[in-house]
Amino acid sequence: MLALSMRSVRRRPGRFTAMLLSATVGAAVIMAFNSLHDVAAAPGVDSASSEILTIAAAIVGGYGTLLVFISIASTLTVNVRQRSEEIKLLRSAGATPLQIKLMLVGEAALIAVAAVVLAVGPAMLGGRALLEMFQETGQVAAGVEYAFGPIGLGAGVGSTLLASVGAAFMAVRRATRAASGTDRANRGRRRSLLGIAALVLGTGSVLTTLTLDETEPAAMAPAAYGSILIAFGLALFAPSMVGGAMAAFEGMLARTGGSGHLSAHNLRRRASEMSGVLMPMILFVGLSFGTLYMQAVENDALAASGAAKTVEDKNLETMNLVVVGIIAVFACIMLVNSLYAAVSYRGGEFGRQRLAGATPGQVLGMVGIEGVVLTVVGVALGSVAGIAGILPFAALRTDSMLPDQGPGMWIGIAAVAALATLATGLGTARKALRTPAVDAVGLAA
Image (cartoon, rainbow, N blue to C red; front, side, top):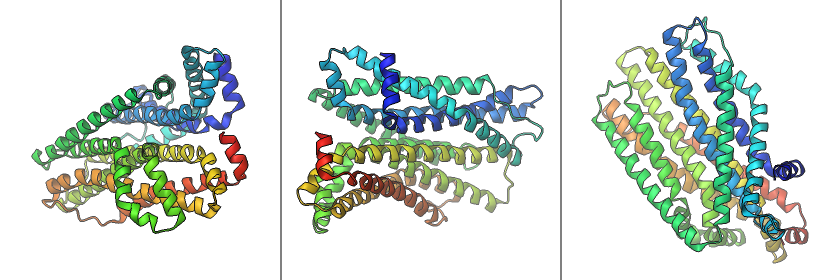
């Protein structure tokens, strides 16, 4: 089956591009930060610099590993779902479920190895840039030299391989049970319970902020973690959120003409599939919005008190900004991958609509309206998660629940989410429409 995996990857490289991109970026992030362990362990590094480098590597390296797994899992799930006919053909030719699973896992492992090789160079450049950033802010001694050693490389290889293989097992297991209605019902119940638990724990975490002393160095942590949990909980309820949005927007969409009617029909029928786009968008908006505004509140509070930033304050600010950057990159990659896969898979649907009388402009309008609805819902829910963390932290640090910062950062975050959604959706649909309608329907069949 390994030989079959190699032939599959070699003959259809385009199918695996999204996974390769996710795995390469993830491996680069993991190796860049874990290489700070190599720097900290080098001879001659003072204890203060070593401690800061080790903390940074541990915190962000852990975030990176989790995000790599989520990103690869979402990409692989879409990939396996779109290969259902191929899997059925292999089963009819005599392949066992175990052989199919080994083939798909082998493909994931091959992509992971290629991703690690491609990521070594960017990881070394990124790790060096991180060290220089810590040195410029005075958190690490200027004489510390960069080193890329076995810890960084081993973490990249191990984490990327484990994430890819583990995600492949999950995707295949989910695909083999997709035909069971009971399994779908059980999965829906598990998703709901997990979402409720995340919302309850997140709410408790943000409320804990109000019980802390405003001078507590880690006062931002409960609000930030609570905001993350709330964003994750809201993301798990994305399918029902799409249905609720349709109830609110359906009448308005129907009055916008053929494109609006098609959009309303598709969003209602494809709520579960479209919800896959909402999850990365909610996470991106919620975490970016919450963390950036909380850091701005902290900076203004320190400036108002006249106190200079300590090394611990600078370290916390650096970690917040770096974590937000990593999450933003992965969330955007997940968003683009999910949208590209979802829209490109609808080539046959677009062909049938055109044969039924829809113009290419109406099809593009439909995709654009779907993107606008998803963006509105995702930005709204992500903003709720961000506000849940911002308000208690602002009340703790400034005695006012409303922060002084204007809406500029929020507008920028929402604009990035909208741009990624609309550009990917419309660009992919435009590419699909280049295929003649009859040929598109024939390929889908």
